[in-house]
Image (cartoon, rainbow, N blue to C red; front, side, top):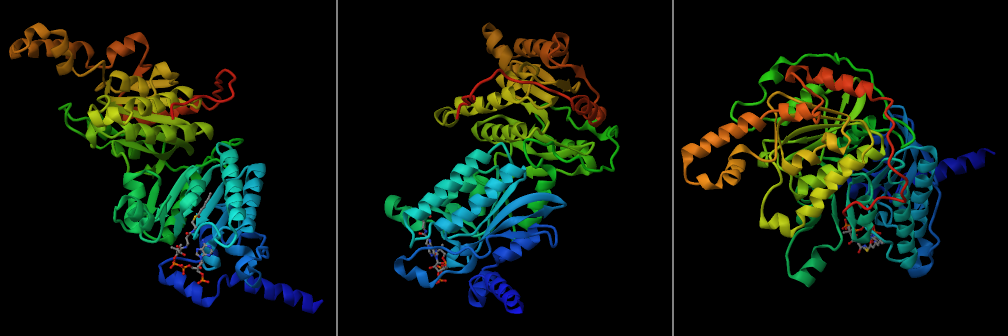
Length: 510
Ligand code: HXC
């Protein structure tokens, strides 16, 4: 009996060694933690329960039968984050380069199936040389099985990907289909074809970091939602994100204790909007002042900065915030900002996270580039996402709400539940100057007359009151009372039930 127990201990010790001391050292030398160290940091202390520690591949080509390491290059299992269940996999680069074999993929599929059945998030830590080259199509089949599970799980349980090393070729498509991707600066990269192939095919010369590093994907491509300095920071931030999210579409997000009065009056908000309508101000200041304890978890902070997306809590309840940022491109809508916000709105809607929209939008960005690249279709994504969202929707217009962008930004017409406006709001088809030049074309060149017309237009439309007369704005509110008004609005919507007519699924303009 003693021998059998000892054998188990020995086998476990062997599995836990991963690829051995030399490879672990090499991993650390690259500034990366090992697969198991990452799991330990991500989960609550002592909560990890491992599956399939002794799984080994069954490939016999290229002498692989002599190299059958325990675990087959991925650590899988479940544990808790601040007491809440999550399933996870962590690829072990020290074992066959974390490459994906048939059995490696099976391990990932097993925990994904468990996550869906039990209604808990899946967190994937990616650090892999890609398809196990010795296995050929068995490896590809494994990827395919994982992809199918990513799709099946989408909208059922939150899926979060951490890229903490290489992630290349078709392998990128598993994280690409998850809800959030986070990368580590200087030690992770993602691309479909690497620098060598790019050089051969297009003659472009780039490094792996330039082609697919964290900076590229958080600033240029928007493939990633956030970039962190190192593994430790990335894992800590994912823990923070999980706290905001529901475990599945069968549950609401956890309500956390809060130490911030919901009816807090913020006198400074009464002077947030500058007198000059062309002067910017920082919308993040408003978000911070509305949030419980000022806590804001921003998503895609470095991309399309004219739009802000992220999570706050109000009265302890998670709220998704979408806000125009007047500090960047005057807060206009364009291709990037529309796509960014649309995806965020859809995430919130499928996981029953109420939406708060803060509006200061002068319209869509004009330009040949925008039109050629399909601003019509991309702008429609955001319009569509808001219109189909049935979660509680509260909107506050702080200043400009012009033209189509007014309608898009969670207006009353798209089934907004509470649409508030500050007295500083200007809700109109366009700005007074542009409007006057069109209506009073005959007076072109007569600056005095045009100024007079512009003043007339402003008096009539540069306010929230025409919209309020129509009931398109439910109430004009004092800026200083916004937290209280928004908190009460969301509280009154906790029992909201809204449905769309039956359909197989919609056909959002992709
Ligand atoms: C088998 C692999 C492997 C792979 C790495 N290793 N990638 N084994 N299949 N795909 C092994 C190496 O042989 C080595 O073993 C160990 O992992 C560490 O690799 P190194 O090359 O020493 O590490 P490093 O110098 O850091 O380079 C990392 C790397 C490189 C850039 C990822 O290993 C590499 O280019 N690997 C091949 C990448 C690739 O072409 N993958 C297939 C892509 S196609 P030892 O024993 O020496 O420690 C693909 C399709 C997916 O993924 C399709 C989905 C539908």
